[in-house]
Length: 109
Image (cartoon, rainbow, N blue to C red):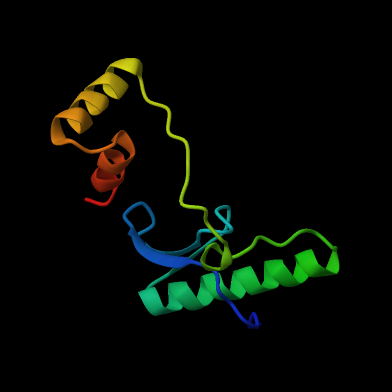
């Protein structure tokens, strides 16, 4: 079974525990597929996702939106301990930049 317009986020990685490749889908974290080679792991997880989406549609359940299709504002809140907040604010002041600019630069490193 194939999923039409499949824009989900897939990843294939090696599993030492299983001694096989494991296919994963970010939007369906409870699903996985084991295979002897990475190509088969990707085909397997894509097939499982297609089957789950078809079942969800039949049951009229909400279907997860693909990460790639979501709109992002560019804002998110991060809570840190007060001492780290102070240290970062000091570092930003010494560099002559805003705390936001400093944090953004650190996140992109």
